[in-house]
Length: 308
Ligand code: KIV
Image 1 (cartoon, rainbow, N blue to C red):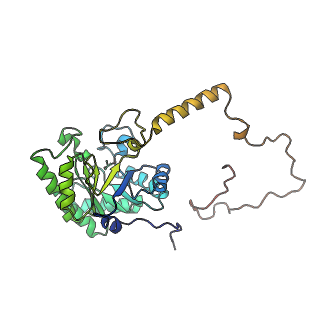
Image 2 (image 1 turned 90 degrees about the vertical axis):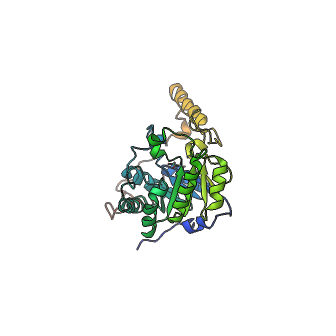
Image 3 (image 1 turned 180 degrees about the vertical axis):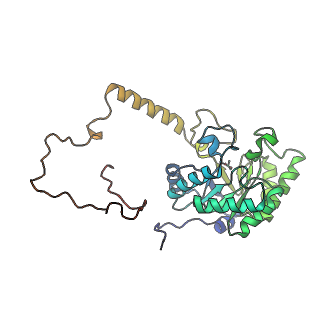
């Protein structure tokens, strides 16, 4: 029988919900195994495999073309890198809007095929029933109101939402989503006073992105947080380092060293055959450590002779 082998305990949806008015929640996006390991090692509470991967990973102008299959693929990769953080998978455009039944099916697929621990979907009053049905199926849901990028064409662009009279609608949406059973609600690109009012009026945590400091948590896209945009980042994002510049500089040094013949040096090269003692006559090859074609087990430990 399968049993988890990690000694870390995963952060759960009920624990995150209980953080309302407690310690603030830190959430970061990740789209692959390498980034997942890094954010997990940093103590991030929640990792979102966002459909922003359409723009960040695939280079698209919007998140609209992202498919459920693509989401599941990236979710699986991220899940393998997380020992502690709770993993949320985004339901992409048109995988849940059609009907509550479609929403339950798509959410179920992300849980089964993507190893997600909860799902996120965009919208307010109009998706409340969808959320209710997913939650009833035993799947924790994160809501997302304010700027909902899957509706970018209806909204007329990536613009701040909830200004003036439109504030009441965002508040109503947030309440509807929380009432439907979402255990947390992302507030994107809304004025900070509106975010504070929503945060005060909900029993579940709000997680802000471009929504000011009053939210119960904050989320950033990993590449914005790391400063990987080479000058391109939304106004609300903060680069906590300049990994983009460091990466370009490192690639350029590699190019120079390859051209000069300085890389690889002796330290990056295996012992040559020349001068190595031949095996004695009749010596048997070392025993196989794994029976060839034994049951396929992609998690089986392999010899790591190539590593440091
Ligand atoms: O897709 C995403 O990364 C998101 C965050 C911006 C909240 O929805």
